Image (cartoon, rainbow over all chains, first blue to last red; front, side):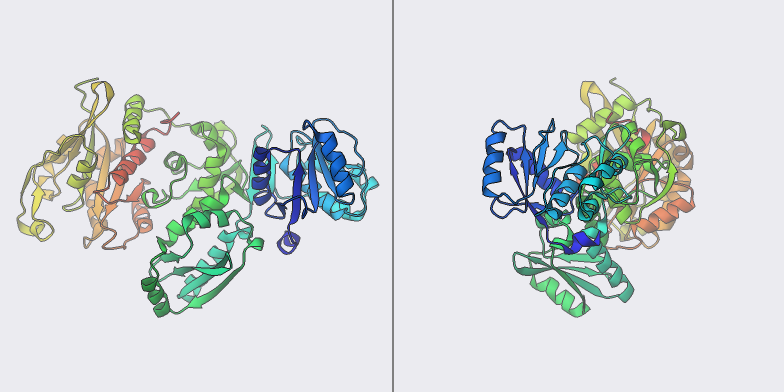
Amino acid sequence: MPKQKTAAPIRVTTIGLDERSQEVLRIAFSSAAKGSCILSDDAAADVVICNMDSSNAKSLWDKNSAQHPDRPVVVISIKDPQLENSIYVSKPINVTTLISSIRQAHLNRGELSFSKASTATATHTQQHSHSMPLQSRTTQNKNKAVEEPPVPDGQWQDESGTVISYYSPTDFLQGKLQEAFSLAQRKKTAVQLSIKLNGNWSNITTDPTHNKVISEISNEELKSLCTTPICCIDTRSKLVNNNDFFEHRKSDKSIIEDTSEQFLWKIALWTSAGRLPKGMTPTHLIRLDHWPNLTRLIQSPNDIRISALLTEQPGAPALIAKVLGIPITHVFSFYAASHALGLTTSSARNSAHKSSFSIPQKSKHHSLFGKILNKFSS
Amino acid sequence: MPGNNHKIIFTGPVGSGKTTAISAISDIPVLKTDENAQDMTKKRKQTTTVAMDYGLLNLNKGERIHLYGTPGQERFEFMWDILTNGGLGLVLLLDNSRPTPFKDMQFFLNAFKDFIKDNKMVVGVTHMEYNTTPSIKTYHQELQKLGINAPILEIDARDKKDVETLIKALLYSLDPWLGN
């Protein structure tokens, strides 16, 4: 969504939320909201989220109203407290609804009126149906804020109630890196992507001739960068002379050297963080063309099991998770990483049901194999 | 059940790391039947396996998995059928620094075709640090030409974790229900 790429993030503070809830909110803001909202201190906040179910909610509400009479408020509670000049979001909280309400509140600042957002259990379709009464009470700007993209983005609840998060790799560092890799392949020369970290530029250089990636950024920092929206990261890229590149390799000791596959795999894995790339759904068929070189790639939970199943026959993430008895987020991460390496093909043909999938048989040596695995993991 | 005859077979050409891989995971010192290498083999290593290597995985309640390494030289081919009897799966190790690793692969796939037909196999590619080509992807392409879709992983035969991952890939291929 282009407007999110250019707009400054909405600064959000909270009233009556404990640290754990704030941490959940922080993660939701960096993933589902793609950084369009950030948690900030009270003084700098554009919008406040007020938990009206907290023990001292009323006094906190009064205090906030007195100190920041013009600051938009999103009220969250189990029951609608019918508070003036606020937007109400019912619990349990649907992240997409909450983010949408924050955006709406921010757009409405200065012209506050009572309005109501959809409930947490609502699907996107239901949200649209809720937008009709909202239109009658709010301005044109408010309508823009509650419009949700038709393609799943952010969080989504499937029919079984499982919350599924979507993301677009191009909204994150992964997209920039893949662009750099692609440019390096086309130009047959090294490409350097520079990233501003704490005021200094750090480089990630891809060398297509030797199939290497040299990174001056630690894995810990990279992992954190992977879930930060690219709109919040300063980057620049340039072609690099191969000689300069090798000099750079010699001179700098604090670098991480990976093959292109190793690097891209870990970036895709960390960017996904259990989310599904946009364009895929949990019921789309995935085929794994061949096994990833798992001994040389960062481990992803249940990667060997998923590989074993998906190289035998195509399957949908929802079904793979069900058959293997693993969290669907593991399948999403694995798919995201395999897809980034070009190991998967997918089709929209639905395979959510076991009837279209040949369930593998348990081996007669099942117990024996289990003991071998136990030995290896002990 | 003590006294069982379950085994995993390690095969591959001379110098591909069969003895080393078995040593990496075996609970006992590997019993080797090395001789000073003669003929072509001597160019690659000083000693080579002439009968077989033997290692062991001790599981709980007295169960054991025998680890057998076949001799790498083709003139010991007659032994391979005997060794595969009762095998749970095949580990084919290929040395990427040899001149024609695909020919090696085809040779061993052909030699063990009856076993592979009824069982699963994994391929471990060794010495990729000395020779990065052919790539793992190319190995997959060659294997798929033969109608086989097996795990192919780069390994350092000295690295216990690498060898264990290879065996895990074999086990999950045999039984995706493991872990449930």
